[in-house]
Length: 155
Length: 328
Picture 1: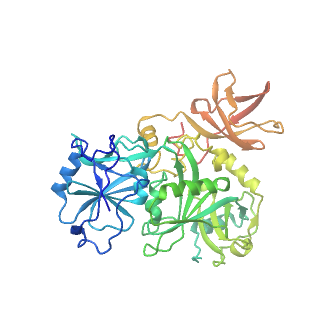
Picture 2: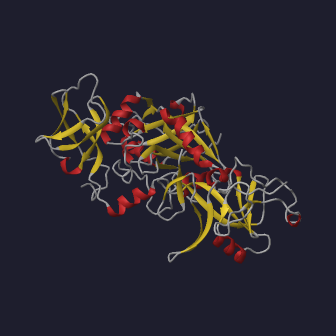
Picture 3: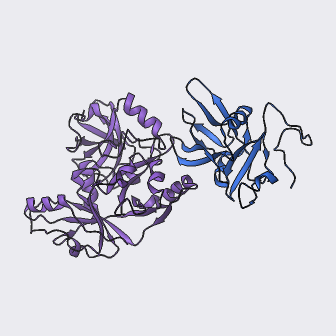
């Protein structure tokens, strides 16, 4: 399977744009064969959508992920605005997960959650109040709560 | 179906005290939804105003909980009573949710929208019946304790207010006089009259979705909200109002001294003081009783509604069951 570049503005150019740090949908390479028994298809299809990783996200993940750890992003119902993002470090990839890799750092989203975050970027933001992984510029999200954890969806 | 020994200490005390007032049992037209699964409590916790973990915690917590589901803007969507059916924390959580039957479909859609990957199942329970048992006013023959446990799933005090008596969940078609000897099945219209007399809102007519505000609807007085739990949908406005705002209007019981025109008073009808100042809006009612959203400043004044040129008089009362210092 060929690798796919997510939709950058110029079709036909395979150049990665360092600033945006766009991720490519992961191709299961040989080095992964040992980390999980089932080689499920973890490429997302165009309709399923993609998640992008920012430079700071990649950098931070490379610092903190140990061994086969990756960043898992899930969407849960609840929270002040209806839906909330949940980040965790995980090591197990399931058949209904989609993997997004950039520079050796991986972000994994299950298909149900992906429907809510496709087109978003995962960023590692460092502010005075906290440093944390955040989902930014989610095209599906409408107003969120003041702390950024919860969001509602445009229908 | 879970069968549990029915103990209702309040009911026993009340029966003895009244020397046998007949319990009036009302079949309610409210729907019951079963929510079960390992994540049932966590799932509901993010959607409702009250602390669902209290319902499922180990210990003697009452098996009923009142709560509202709000929309993102903090307005009421559904008023619900939760019942704990599972016996202990070792069992998988099994919660029954009582709601207005006209919104059973939309509440299911609402829950399914936010379910995503939670390990819960949501299924209606058409094989169960819900009853309200209201303390009667006249003395009568001795009522004894509920004896027949296998037809009744749950008998518990109404979590909203003592004046609302008890809630009983049975299998459909159960014979009530076997479960509560000496009880009489009443007309549900009398149940609604009792609610309006006490000022207890219930269902979409009293709490229009997207319109009613939880704190103005006396959610806090009815034990339906926790201000110490984590985030739920609509929490921001509610918490902010509670901590910083002043609640100037509340739902109050009103009564009309004179007979009303046949179509009654329309929802939203403006209520005025004698001098013509706006005092609030009529919400819902039946016969000569109802509830209205009224400015607390005008509660004890003579009020009226303008109905096609006629001034219809009404008066409001502050319910006895409201917490005393806060009733201002």
